[in-house]
Length: 170
Image 1: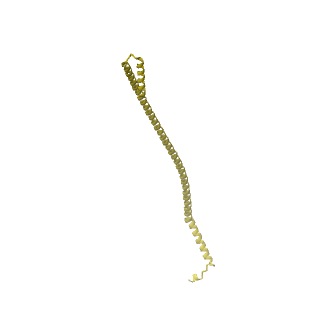
Image 2: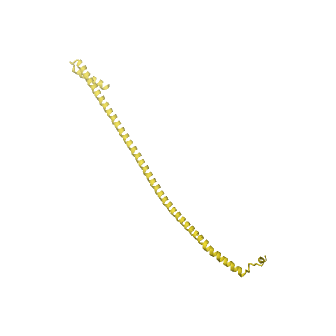
Image 3: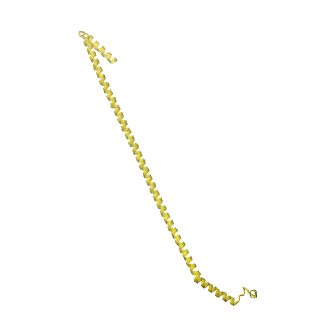
């Protein structure tokens, strides 16, 4: 114990200083030989791995931006296609409506023409019927005139005029 009681850190002995230096140098040599190289290699490997991960992340980011740009292009193309399809559908709708209106107008014109033709036919039938009745009346008038005395011509003319006036009044 005497040895420890006499020990002073501020005033080391030269033997202690030499042994401490030798042990420290031996420890430094062993550490540099067996520990520093593997630690350095591990640090170098870690640095390489980190750099590779950063490169991969950058590459992934570039790929994502490329994919995003491609997605935007596809979306724009899909919008254009949708717009074109909607335009085609609207054009088809307008065409169908125009065609339906045209057919309706043609059907209307056909029906109007048919009605006009029916009216003309009925008018012609009425005219023919009227002519037949007028002809029949003329025959009746002539018959009545002939039945009347043929001797008095002025009476026959007056009688014919009165019959004609009666016909116009009816």
